[in-house]
Length: 230
Image (cartoon, rainbow, N blue to C red):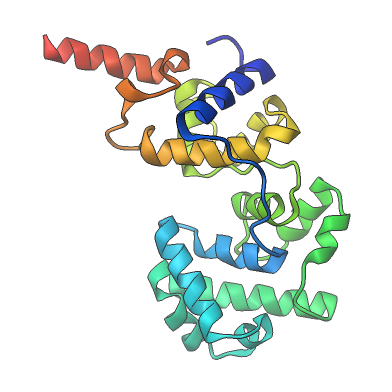
C-alpha cells in the first residue's frame, strides 16, 4: 500500500460501510456517564462493561451517591466488569475531583473547550488514559478526535497505516491526520465492528475481509492458507 493519506482512509471507510452499514454520529450520553462507562470498558468485553454500568446506575440514583458510597458497594455493582479493586476507587476519586473542581459532578464545560484543552483536562484524572479521554470527547461531545482501542490498533498495523511497532498511544496522533474530522466517529465505530467480526486477534477471517485487497497482512494469511492446502 502507498503511504496512507485521506484517500486511503475514505476508501477504507467506504468498504466498511458496504460491509456493515453506515454509522451516523450520535451522542452516547453526558460527559460523566460516558467517562465512567469507558473506564468500566477497560480490559473487558463490551457486554461485561455495559452490564456493570447498568448495575451501577440501577443501584445509585446520582453520581453524588456513587462518589460518597462505601467503595465495597461500588465494587459489588461493577464486579462483572472486572478489575474492581482498581476501577471502583478510580471512579469515585474522579467523581469527587470533578465535584471539588466544579462544585457539582458535571463535565459539560468541556464542550466549550477546544479538542486539545478538553483532552488535557481529562488526562489529569488518575486512571484516564488517551483512549478513555478520546472516547469521552467523541461520544459525549462530538469532538473531532479519533480514539484508538485494541481492535483499531491491530487493524491499523495489519493494513500498514502505522508502523508495526507503533503503540496504541502513538496511533492516536498518527491516524488522526489521515481521517477527515467528519469521518472520525464512523471510522472508529466501524473499525471496532470489523475487529470484532472479521479482523480478529486470533483466527482472523482474512478470506472474507472487505479490506483484503488493501491489506498486506491479510494477503499473506491467504497465501499461506492456500499453500498449506496444496
